[in-house]
Length: 217
Image (cartoon, rainbow, N blue to C red; front, side, top):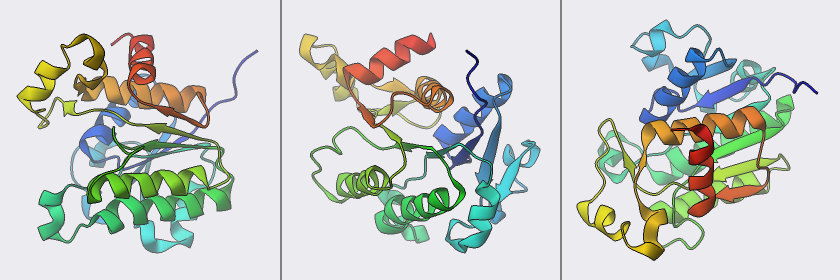
């Protein structure tokens, strides 16, 4: 039986993970709408993407209109403390954007939300992980089927995991801590979104690495 076609709405498309998700999707002709903030619309690689939603997430009705027809929302937006000087906060970038996307998704009939979270969000310590946990709660309680992906540290592009983490990950019981390459993470996010599976599940540790293996990367 042929699966119905999926249309992915990628929020955070211009971030490091989002760019890789879009790149892999376009290479395989996976239908998607790349969300781009107006100030980034004329920059590369966004400028050359064939289908974009150029809209602020806080816009309400315009966001819902741009999302119409989408089956899946990938929420890849997040921030880091080093961006606070530019006005970002965990409340605005991690929690607020998730709330805005969930509200729009409910209005237009999206049937799957894929949330990029972080390892440790299940037992959050500190502001960063507590923000991730709150974003997860918003998605879980949305009434829409969901998948949460909690990767360990990233590597690739400008991401360089701590050397100690790599050493710890070599220990037999701590293999799940090994850094994930951003290409692998993007492939998992795309696979989960295309398959609409696994649903209502957190991918972390062994379950995440099983999905990585399934991508072949």
